Every structure is written in C-alpha cells, then in structure tokens.
Amino acid sequence: MRIVVAADSAGAELKNQLRDLLRADERVAEVTDLGVPDAEDDRAYPLLGLAAAEAIASGEADRGVLVCGTGIGMAISANKVPGVRATVAHDSYSAERSIKSNNCQVITFGARAVGPEVAKKIVAEWVGYRFDPDSASANKVAHITDYENAH
Image (cartoon, rainbow, N blue to C red; front, side):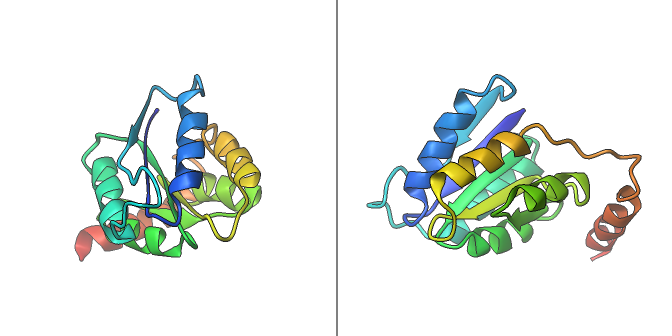
C-alpha cells in the first residue's frame, strides 16, 4: 500500500507522528509526505488536501492521511477531487466503516480534536481494512460513483 500524508501548520506535528508510524508499518510499501514539515510553514490546507487527493486519483497513491485543526477542511478539500472519498474519523468504528462501508481512500484528523495516541491507534487499524466489492455496501458506493461520473 502506498500512502500519501499531508497537513497544514495546525496538523504538522500529528502528521509527522502518523507518517513515522506508517513508515515503520510493514503493510505499507511507501509513504509520501507532501508537507508541511512544521508549524512555521503556512501553506493552506486546501492546497495540501487537494494535492494528496490528486495523487490518489492519478494512481500515485492508494490512500491518504491528512491532518488540519479539525480534519473537516482537509476532508472537504479531498472530496472535491473526482473519484476520491474522504472522511474525518476520531474513533475506531468510524474509521473501520469508512473503508468497509464507504470505500474511502482518505482519512482525516483534527489535531485540535484528537490526541496523538488515539490517532495512531486508529491509523494502525485503518491500514488493515479493505473494502469488499461483493459486500452489501458495494451497490451504495456504486451510486455515489455513478453520480460523480455523470456530473
């Protein structure tokens, strides 16, 4: 699995911790860090969220982990890229269902809303989840994809 990570200045510290966790995970083949490196870099979250989602849409990455103050802005930005589904998740169940029920490729976190140990636990679990294209949810996800393709 190839994962892209990105954060704005509010999420840089948590993103760096999650990046390092992912790089140490043997299930992850590659982690690409799009920045920002630290809180001194003031690039806006939409630029980073869109860049990460574009990497997924183009096939350069399989999934993304994005961090901002709340996670909401990153999720909104990533969801603007056709073919990408992103969600904020601050608990294990939501993270699991984002993959198994909705085939999301992107998980976002709010560094001001979730502690680093909780985020690390969620990401470690999230890497192991797969969408089952034969599941009851597949038809529901197909409706979303069909709408997106038509518009």
